[in-house]
Image (cartoon, rainbow, N blue to C red; front, side, top):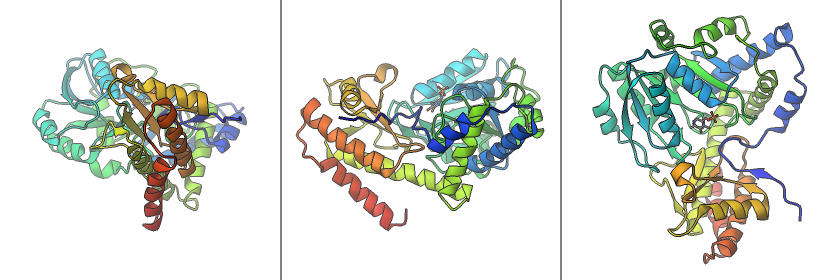
Length: 391
Ligand SMILES: *Cc1c(COP(=O)(O)O)cnc(C)c1O
């Protein structure tokens, strides 16, 4: 039988065909009026997509490059910072801030959970120069309360840096209202194009902080990128094809709401949220246990397999039987959980198809007692309710 390869991973995510065409046609030189027009257009679109009046910059790197930039550009060796961590990506903040010589305080939540705001409040000190967190911790599929944390950070007077790499396009943000100083996104997540681009919004407070930050930086010198962006250029050779693809993807997202990118972005977030809710309902109906039931992300859903079972069996069976690629757990969560993504170019039929496949896997690979249609029906009920209430 024909089996189409389908990605259900939280990065890379499925590619938008219109973006693929744009990338294939992107043989233009980057120091030309043609590229400058494209770059300027994409930077302006990104501001709307991120939802901010702050500068938004593009870097030729994966998301971690922008994470590193927001440490090297904002801090000096010896600075005290606070990291909120609840998984592998939070741990990356700890490693990064330590690598740049910061004194790192940590608020930790167990895998599968989010932070207690009272604990964050207690840990925040006037000496903290910056607070680093994720909007959604992709390794555990948990969503954090960025708005709640932002309020506390504002009171404390620290800078707030948010890794929104899977939060953007799956969560509603009020970047300027909440006071997020840096918000980071990555190309292989909600914006439907391949890996290789990072983007980040930078507030005036963050620009001011860079004037006194002494950590070394060169390739990821944000001030240099800002100067160049003002001339519609990048400091170094940009990832021209990805920029062209990103422009096409943002056009597509705007096209979902009659050309209004802000509304299109909200529709994309709602799409992820409905598909995530439908997936959760379907999996629970099949007898699976959600790994993050308290604060589930819309970017991805994580499922804990029963004790004594290996989640790798589910990942493998979906791949070999259906060519559907889902993600295993990362690090010590490997074998214990599996993750299904909803961010970017996923639709409701993708969700229903995967749940249909999961019913086969549950029955034949895991030997669970399920009836065909049980998971799909639960998802359909969620979808019907969302459509009736206006999605
Ligand atoms: C994917 C991801 C990253 C970035 O990883 P890269 O491999 O550098 O693109 C960072 N944070 C989160 C939450 C992610 O999901």
